[in-house]
Image (cartoon, rainbow, N blue to C red):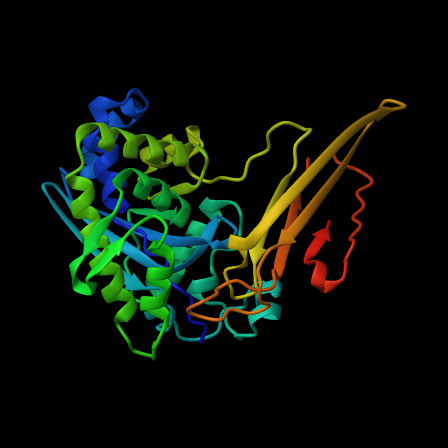
Length: 354
């Protein structure tokens, strides 16, 4: 079974429900949430959050690969937070589930698994799949399902600064967080080990304590980071509450795949290389639009450069590798005469034009 690094991240679950609310009166962009305060905090009845902790150094359709998740039960004034390895519920599913063909070709696991269930770029669709796998794996079907990515946590850490994890006698900074978590959860791992859960819990609870003790001006900065990443869809949310889900979709916070301008396109990258190559990928995109004989022609060129120094992961020193990506281009429905050309340079060049 593939052992992927943790993508720890978070007590910001507590911040997504708590901070989006602790700072409600402080930031004008949070005002639309006010009607949902009781619901989000679990004031009238408990509300559950399951936060997939995505490591966007390994891209999937709606964020990073989620090797771990956080679970928050909000029952105001109590908030219960716990962390778990994705492979715990992943290993409970019985029977066979036919995977999407690219997943089967890449991993050859046989049955489709929870760990690879983030496949459709429309998050409401993927959320239905994730909820099904979670339930079959003995986990809750949460009131609110989120994907929260490493890049968001790093932004928050830039505000929080260094904090201590006493269980490991470690000082965590924005620069060493990733390698600390990778090393503590991957090295000397064995089936049945709780080291990923234990590490995430220790770091997460220390992080929570540090955040809650921030001065007011830094709490506002954290709230703004969270809000901006909702706007940018670096955080996506799916809710079983119809009113809240409608609100999320109206604000474009639900990760739904929608058509916009007829002159736009969408590229979805999915890393199927079982590595963290996305941390080393640089992209250059050219989009040339021309008009001739009343026909509008679009020529889109995307170039990828992989700066990974090794072809395969070499923990704990290197987690990158070759970028084996499944690319999906979404075009306007009325697009015609679609052609795709690929240039595959020498492997040593590590640059591919699509």
